[in-house]
Amino acid sequence: MPFVPHTEEDVTAMLAAIGAGSIEDLFDEIPTDLRAGHLGAVPSALSEMEVGRLMAARAQADGQALCFIGAGAYDHHVPAAVWQLASRGEFYSAYTPYQAEASQGTLQLLYEFQSMMTALTGLDVSNASLYDGASALAEAVLMAVRANHKSKSRRVLIPRALHPLYRRAVHAIVHNQGIELVEVGFDRAGGHTQVEQAQAAAADQGFAALVIAQPNFFGVMEEVDALTDWAQSEGALVIGVVNPVALALLKPPGDWGAAGADIACGEGQPLGIPLASGGPYLGFLCCKQALVRQLPGRIVGRTLDLEGKEGFTLTLQAREQHIRRSKATSNICTNQGLLVTAATIHLALLGAEGLARVAAACHANTRRLTALLCAIPGVEPLFERQVFHEQALRLPAPTADLLRSLAAHNILGGYDLGLEYPELDPALLVCATETRSEADMTAYAAKLTRVIATRTQARCPVEPKFA
Image (cartoon, rainbow, N blue to C red; front, side):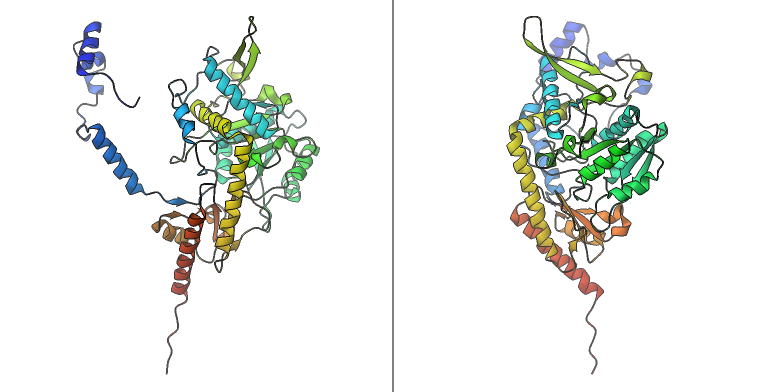
């Protein structure tokens, strides 16, 4: 609610109706020693105009930097209609009801979201979202270990080229359940995960599942068909971690290899969710029909009532609120109702063609940015394979220093790969979505050229000439 509609007369009338002398009387059951007392540090009330002026000044002080950071959170254009509709009173709740009597509008929206995600991933079933992409992968790992009846192993192969924060989140959630995450290295020339590396990590000990990111953290395209076929030939399930925008152009996980990935998950932030200091985000999780009973969360179905009218209802709720705790598929999963609303509206507005245009524009901009930056002496691609959305670059100077200098020019230059991959340092991961213009990319290249030149001159001063 953007304003409080009650006048002093309204408040007095309401208090009189319930027999209270003041608003303070409504809290008289709280012991005095538990009350905060006078909040002396809170400034005096401001008018609406003064608050607006203050917030505008704070926003201006923050600045509006040009953002070339991706690394799992992307600066996409969000049509104005998305949040104009998502913030309506009918939808504006970040935590969607779990009760079966949830409104038909809420249930239909979740049904549409599930339908869109199964279409994007090429799989049979989708749940009604999770906290974020990292926790969705953790749930996928737990699900794969439970569901793989061909293997008794509790080992899961997870590539080092997967997002570092995803790997940490998965470890935090699954390691106390006796699941071992076995790291698979990446090829230093291509930046991708090779079947031979996965075989070496498996070490003839058996494994329950293989995680495949497409594209991976470096933006590099993986050999998903070969990896999928190998893992399934070893009796393991395949978990795909995918970018929903990329799926508008790339082969969906359900079509990987001969039989398709078994589970797919990822982060839904690119679908209508603006960057907002780290969240909130939403995770999606899809699977084959054969695994539906192991899918955490809930599923909304469409049916007809006795009068032949279309209706929506919760059809699967495999969570501890609804069944015995020991039988629950998850005790932590929840869905991000408000963000699912925005993502569903966003997808409905763009449609398949619109989403494909966004993906193509992102790819074209990343290629253009790469060409501009690699024209700078000492800057070159870190890997030789094709990429989507992001490009890893080798730099001629310390990454942190270059990023600090760029930030001083109001440019967020990218992600420092040396933070998580010291063997690649100095290296930078850059991203250019459809929101970056030619002028933006040219300005970035010009600033980086000057920064590198300054750093190079500082390291190599001109030697004095002696007579």
